[in-house]
Structure formats: C-alpha cells, structure tokens
Length: 246
Length: 246
DNA sequence: CGTAAAGTTGAATTCTTTCAAACACGGTGG
DNA sequence: CCACCGTGTTTGAAAGAATTCAACTTTACG
Image 1 (cartoon, rainbow over the protein chains, first blue to last red):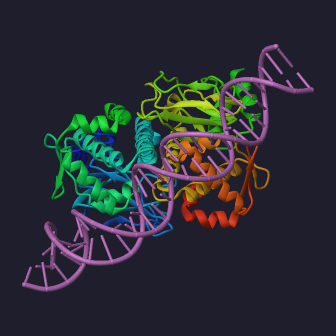
Image 2: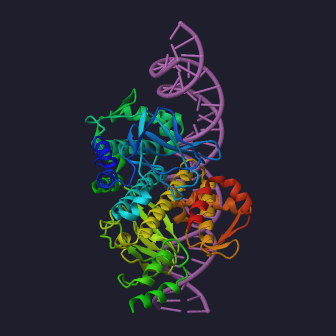
Image 3: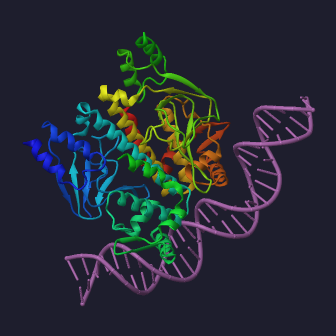
C-alpha cells in the first residue's frame, strides 16, 4: 500500500532521473518501512525556513527556484547558492541544529520532503554513498564560485555565473535551446557575486551590447556560447564531471 | 595480527580524537578485513598529487600543512583551502577521476592513507554518516570563505582568514595560547583571498600597526582577539558548530 | 491608475591593481 | 668567512576598477 503509493509518487516525478532520486525511488518501491515523500508547495517570495530556525530533515526541490541566503554583519545579503530542481535543500553539518542559511523561493516552487535519509543510510549504503557524492558536488560548486569571485573582474564574474546556471539548467532539461528561465534580479546577481546592483547593471549592459546574451522578463538567452565560454575559460569543467556522475 | 597493528597504529596518533579518525580506529581495532593505514612522509614544497592526475583514494593529514591549489585560465593561482592536521585530503565528486586540485605541502608533513572508506561504508553506516558530515563541514567552510571574499574589503578579508585559521588550529590543539604556526607566505594569503601580494603586504602592515596581530618568521600571534573578532563579525559561528559535532 | 520595486545613468570618491624599484633574509659556493 | 643569488617582503606613484550618492526611468502588480 505504502509501497504502491510510493511507486506512483516518484514515478510521476519529472526529477526522478537525477541525483538522489533514482536511488530513493528504488528503495521506496521495494520497502514499506519508509514514508512516502510529501509535496510542499512554496509560493514565490516565501521562505521555506529562516537562518537560525531549528531544522527538520532534508528536502529535494521538485519545481521552481530557491535561493540560500545569509546576512553579513554589515547588513549585506550574501546568496550562497541557487538551488535548482532535483537538488538537495537543507544539508548542513548539524542537520538538527539551527539553519545556517535562509531558503527563499524565487518562483512558485514545490519541495519534496525526503524520507529520513540518515536512517536510510544504515540499511542502504548506496544512499550513503550518493549523499557523500551529493555533498562533494556542493563543495565543488562552491569552490568554483569562490574561485570565480576571488580572481576575476565583474564582467567575467557575471559571465561565469550566467554560464554556470545555464549549464546546470540545461543538464536538467530546463531549457529551450539557448533560452533558459532566469528569475534572478540584478540585485540577486549582485548579492551572489559580491558586487553592487549598479555595477551589475552596467556590466550586463556591456554583455548585451557585445551580443553575448539577451536578458529580459526573466528570460535569458545565450547569444554567443563560444565567446562566453572563452571569456569564462575552462573553469567550468568540474561541473561537467559532477553531472556525468549523476 | 593486522588488527593488533592497527590498534597500535591509530592509538599512537596525535589526531585520533578528531573527525573521522575515532570511528576508523574503532573499526580497525575490531576487524582484520581492512588494511591498516600507511604513513606517507611529504617534504615541504612537494606535491602529494597534481591537478589532473588520476586519484587513488583519500588521505588524512597527520602532521604539517597542505594547500589545495588550482590555476585559473589567466595563470593566476587560487588556493582552495588550507588542509590542517586531522582533516581529509582528496575528497571530490569523482573519487577515481582526475584530481580537481593540486595538493602541496607547505611544511614537512605526514599524510595517512585512509583505508578504503567507501568500502567501509557498506559494512559500517556510521562511517558513511561521518563522511557525509565531513563533506558538509567542507562545504560550510568553503561557503564561509566565499562569503568573506565576496562582500568585504582587504582588511576584513585578511582578518577573517587569520581568525579562521587560528580557530581551526586551536581546536586541534596546534597553538600555544594566542601563538600559532603560520607557514603561509604573503603570496599564499593573496592567492587564497584573490588579492595582490602588494596589497596584502600593505594591509598586514596596517593590522600590525593597529596592534591586532604580530607575524614574523611564520609565527602568528593574535594580539587583540576581541578587536579582531569584532572586525570580522559573527561570520565564524558556523565553524564552532562544525567543531562541536566532531 | 497609482504605487512600489526594479532597472538605468552620471559624476565623484574610494579601493585595489599595476609597474618599478629597493630591501632583507637564508642558503650556496668560492 | 664573505660575496652572491633567489625568494619573499616593503615602499612609492599612477592607472584602473568598483563603489557611493543622487536622480531619473521603466516595469510589475494590486
């Protein structure tokens, strides 16, 4: 019964080919020990949880776009990461401690409450390994952003961010050729890269003038992938590696 | 036999109270299935492995100081992280693929070849959970650095880095009061934070003039912890959380 | 339609880099 | 023992990048 509903649940999910989901789905279809995941709708601009709040397990983003944010002591907002459909939400060293970051939806989104993954680990080592792998991917992605924030000028930073998001979306099939949804505001870009809104604006203007990208109404088009890729350099490689492993 | 040698091995290790080591030691003392770890000396300025090389499992740093580095397309070196004694070395999404970064010793160091942790995971879920936790700590630390590189000026960046390293060393008992070893050159600091050597020099000069720190001959002294902490802000909290969990 | 939020532009200031040149120190070989 | 060399550190001056402040335009949305 439970098992059957689980089958139905995951087999209808558009994300059931990525990351942790296939492994979870397989286990849920075979065992009734674990609760079936639950869907939680998360309207745009609404927080899933706030920094400092007690945490309750992990989520997987099913639809939409979620930002992890934190405030620096100077009152500036740092966006830690954009969480895209299929990715884990809420992982941190102390899983049951206060949330390190806030999680806010940019679009109307749907999150999926993952089963108790840590419990699942004891019976199913493959889940543990997948979790280790997923964490390692998060680390690598953050290291990429750190590198690109550290040693580059504004133009390269923004080009990198756009290309990275494009690749991650495309990998998940959330693209229409070179067109991808792009719900981030210029302020969101600024808070991700550590720039000012004004400087982001000027730099985007240049990128548009150079016919590298087009961006309005939250729709991004990569007009010249080759030039953009050259501008950004080879730094995207590790991501390919991540993705191939999925 | 093997089991006994393992007991001797880990029980003599100065790092056997931190991170993964206690769990590994316990398992090695009970089972002869896994090989005892091996010590590999790593002289100063020598690479443990180079970016792009094929990887062979994980290491744990036993003594010394190792840097993970990568080169950007502009020929600039980015230091991803300082690896301190007790920490894992070589973790990445594709464990058997080419190394994402180079690992180089700053001092004469000793690394410890970990047993096949992934294999261990299947029989011992607690290792898997520890691995997930260790990965999450790495992610959090990287996110901290990213945040501090993004939204701060040079003075704050350097103050943050110094305080972060001090805390991490102190947690491992590698300190003498407010004095810690500090084998990083000014160029290393620059390559960690994305600044120029020259600007690091000027900024360090100011921090010394303000009597916040003292730094010569690779020995760092925190002269005014309170002021430094105030300057850096509350951003260090997550690290405490990491450490408490160990 | 009106208001709030997001985007755009200009000019002045601040921070960081770049270029150029010394200086200090440790180690090496004569 | 000292001269020499290389690495790492220090300092100055000019150029470049990003921020700040201020004002204005456009877009989104009830």
